[in-house]
Image 1 (spheres, one colour):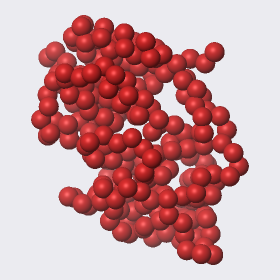
Image 2: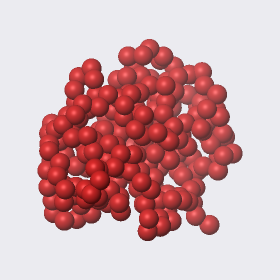
Image 3: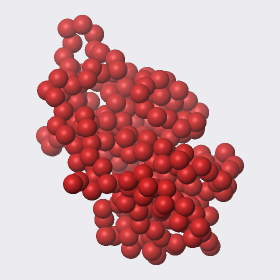
Length: 260
């Protein structure tokens, strides 16, 4: 039997760890625990973690700093769970790369639902069914139609900054001709930008285009997805040149797009 998703619960409160472990294991997840950054690093180093729940105030350690450290070395989803409920903390957490943010006190079933929603957004783009371990079944030859189609008669393959995106087969090929794997959400985001090149898309617009996903009430979760995409297609993700941020508005693909 395939293994279920492996969740790492990072919290200095043992009662919270036990509560989350019991609820997650009851729902079929495997769970590891960490009470501090050292234990967290040890579990992550062993690999095999599918998602991390991270307390913002971890004893004397700053969860935002830990989130940044995780993002620097691991491409794993992060769900922040914290007693700090200020909007600014949520925004900062999401901008640092968290995929969701839940405020204590929480209902355990809500945490499970939000974790499942985040994991669904991480499915590879070719997946139509996923086992709990993340192994995916092969998609049928005919892929789902994109959110917005090119004009009549236009090619389903487009090129931008050396990258080639095939909207029909839903494949992205790099300047080195190697195929790059994207999650479903990452592909749909890139597709939305490529089909509207050099045009600013607000976060609300992106959420509307990416309909069918489970979004949190904080649309800054879009920022985490943009950050993930940048790490895959930008020469320097810290200084993005392709997917530009338009402060206070949203994002845009800054380069021209042409049929491939």
